[in-house]
Image (cartoon, rainbow, N blue to C red; front, side, top):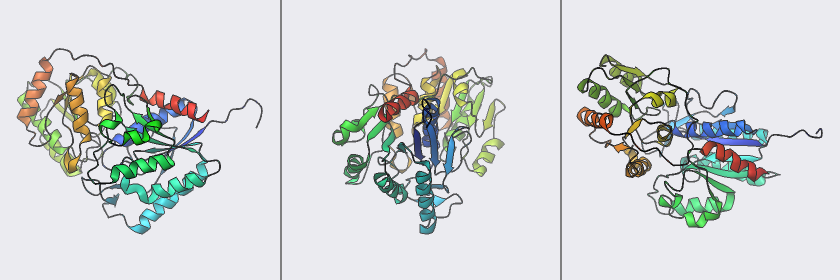
Length: 382
């Protein structure tokens, strides 16, 4: 190596999204920040392709995709809905391990695991074994959102803590401890406390001025489970004044029959699209947002003056979005509607109240999580 030439640290970043697009969106923001900080980043994706994620210029290894076969995330299916069999899963595992060997990373980041993505152990436990056998051994980091899904089965939290203690160098918690602490949703945090590092919330950079301006935006992330919210919003638009401009963003995973049904019954002041890559910019110009309470959507909203109406996703026993929404409501930063029995009348009343409400307080939460994650990892690799 010529004197003075610096070799960029290599990062191998595994992310598996199963239902929505939140995991891949957050991981992509972190990968972009790492690349901007001079890291050589390879992102390994395991879900269906999502437009714009990872960003252009980021090296990507796309494993044969799997999706959740049910709302409880307990089963895996191939992209065509066929249950994922042993031969298919073994092929995925082998591609992942080969990509790891080829990348020769200095740092491996595993998104969600071992706090989530337990159904991916068939390939992640072999990856952990390969990391332990590597010479030199790369740093192994878990990348997790600030609020975890409550474990409902005995022993799961202990299993998670043991995996962290035995294999991981750090747990990067992408949150602000002034908003929520890891121990609020992971009871055994004290067992791994020396490895926990808070990065701040991974929110987008300040969005550009919007190219289109809408009064109300209703969005459902990936769209796999958002039909009821979109339908209620579309009908609410017909109840409220016709001069309000509405934008409905269905997400790429809303079934085509549902998208067609929405399109066929749309008021003239409502626009329906599947995806807008300038979503953060659109929120900047909107007055009210109706959405689920996913991590990335909330991060987008906290960077704007748009008033959030949150409809937390609760199917399959999900608890994470409810915790987030209730924390935001307590801070005066959001209103909440229930997912169950959501009606156009409820949505219309909430939107009407939001339009007339005084400006909500600006947040003091740390929203610089992507950049700070890169800084934290830079210190770790020296």
